Length: 123
Image (cartoon, rainbow, N blue to C red; front, top):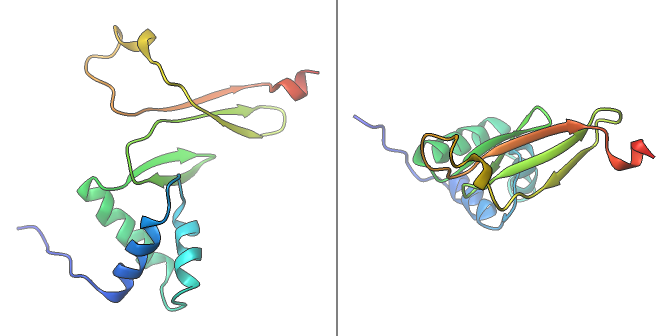
């Protein structure tokens, strides 16, 4: 039997704040935004709510700079990390045709981390 989640004022406040976010976000960023409206909401409440949404397929998680980040939709997440400075540069890939014959299924989203030396450090 699936445990039914109950709606609370805190969840409603978190949901409303989450509805205004259209980019990747961290639990800490969401907590900071929510805390401005209700100082009693703790970071554990944010993590529980995010995990609940992940379980329902309403939030998706990715790893960026060894931290979990989240999005409300299945998005692709790509970044280049400079090995000299540690600087992270996000970029987009719109076409994965080169992988079609290698993947035994259909691609819905992906995460890609590329490491190397950035242009600035090469100069």
